[in-house]
Amino acid sequence: MNEERKILVEEVESVEKPKLAKVEDAVDDSPFVSSEVERPDDSGQSVSTKLDTNGKAAPVIAPSPYEAESDAAKLNRKKDYLEGFLAQKPTEAAAGEAGGDIYEAVIDTLKSIFDPEIPVNIYDLGLIYGVEITPDNHAIVTMTLTTPHCPVAESMPGEIELQVGSVPGVGHAEVNLIWDPPWDPQKMSDEAKLELGML
View 1 (tube, one colour):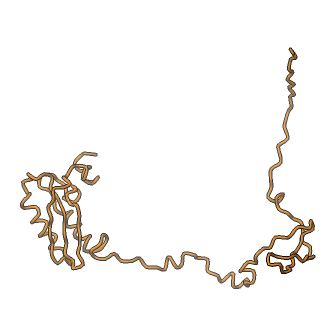
View 2 (cartoon, rainbow, N blue to C red; view 1 turned 90 degrees about the vertical axis):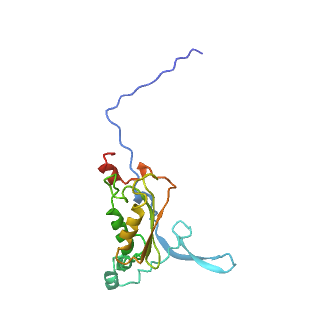
View 3 (cartoon, rainbow, N blue to C red; view 1 turned 135 degrees about the vertical axis):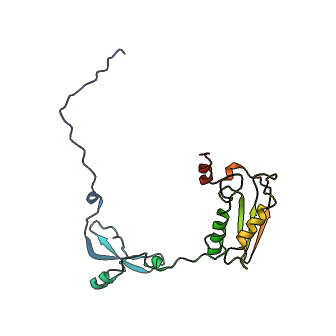
């Protein structure tokens, strides 16, 4: 069984490209004939079915709702499908919610108060943990300080209370000083880090 296998090599100058598939080739053009046959349906009643030239049942195509529409009606049909969406007016944020007038005014006031030791405002420094505006427009600010031994630990909350209380629309201001979670430099905004050369 020492039969050698021979490999035949044929050199050609070009190869004919394979035919590309076309959509037209996949469409069945066979015309439908008007002949109908009676066949029983599931309930046993006789229904007529159109047959194509091959004798197969023709597919039933649902009529388009726009077939009966006149050309003038088609032209007058509105093409802007976003019309209803665009007609809606944006809902106004309540004054005490984020984006509301009083809330934003309180935030702007907090951004105007600077830490005496670090040349950055207390909001960007990350000392403000929360701002809440009650339905009666009372402002409650939850904050911390860089350290409990901060020299302004006694005076800073009172100053913030006065500043926030002077915001137009705020009825009463209250500052809650907390130490948990403790402040760390990661709580600073990117602007504050950039100002201090940490970025």
